[in-house]
Image 1 (cartoon, rainbow, N blue to C red):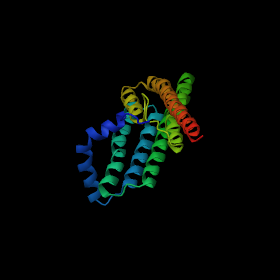
Image 2 (image 1 turned 135 degrees about the vertical axis):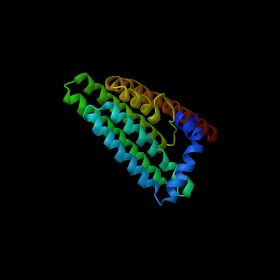
Image 3 (image 1 turned 120 degrees about the vertical axis):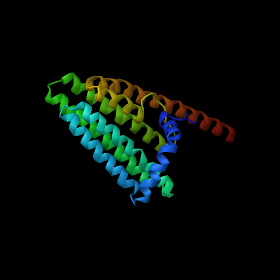
Image 4 (image 1 turned 90 degrees about the horizontal axis):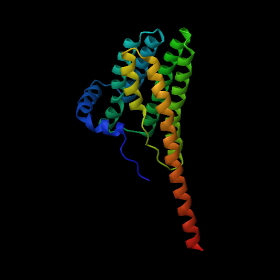
Length: 210
């Protein structure tokens, strides 16, 4: 079952004319895609620190800058002709760490304020974000597709960063908690449909052989 292009896929096409020259410039400096991946993770960690200290606007701006930096690693690898499965693996793992660290900053802030509803929605947002990625990875490991849903990683940052900049961390965590878990459920249903279709074809083939 083929999935429609995601919002992330469309963004890559739209901004290709901007990312390619920057990626070529960074390649010319001798930087590697993995270096940019780690730089993006380091920047996200800095943003999470500001968030943990209640400096939401600063944290949001830092996250914005380094999310943009992180978008360049795949572009650089493609331009170098060195796109590898391991590079994609490192990028995906780095993305998961970045989200954990960011939500960790939010969790620390809410705990320091004694804001237990904030702690709970941040926990739910973290769980939803992890499940969105896990369901896709597990589905692809079984030969299914799961690039569907209303709140993939890019959309999560589209929600998180502006609301942090405007000092609304509770709303940001709440929206991601709700929509992130809905997205995970959408992907589960998408895989379920494919699983049933696979079973139907297997039964038909078995009947045909007999």
